[in-house]
Image (cartoon, rainbow, N blue to C red; front, side, top):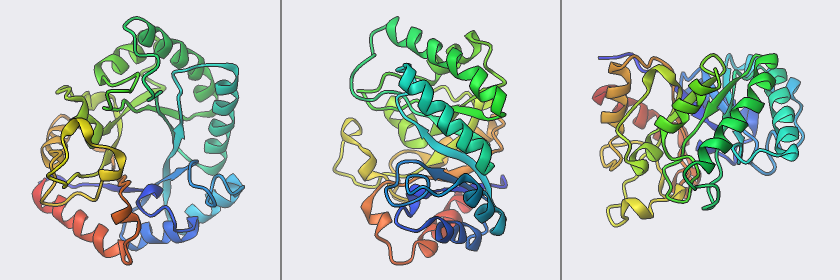
Length: 270
């Protein structure tokens, strides 16, 4: 039985202030966290300095594995470059190891040839910025049909084509992997795994959205257990980061108990 390592994405409990979120992770025995730049009224958007974030993480004995995320990263522009520099600088200053890179997801930039060229251009521009800061870029393909980067194979090819294997890694998201229907895993290029489950039996795969994503349990329809087993068997030894978006999880009175149950389930079944 493999020894699973967990991480906690702030999306698991987005209403908790940063220090309380860090305390939740520590109380669960989780040593790695992901912070986000899309939570109004919370770090990073509330103006919390990276020095304060770093101090809080150290106080709780935590490693910040990533900032989530630079959105629309493959739609490169001067404004995107400025945003990237700001987030990379924040990541370096707060002690985060990586920046998650999320592609456009509105039906644009999907044409064959166009999307590959845009991806390579963005990776080429990001590489020196990330390298100078010592930050890893975590490329996260999304399984939605409207996304401009659905395929991990396409992402891996682009990373290799720009000489970016030392700079970039893939995010394997169990939800998006299931939606994309792409069997290849690329464990050797995977830097982080996001885990969440879908239990609603009345929703088709094509209609699954972030709001359906709950903690992983025995009623999961996404094949989390099979995906994690395959990744571990292929050599992945990094953290499994909880990233549920469902309000049913966000509104829990006792998220610690629910997370502990999900962690126990995964340890017993993987």
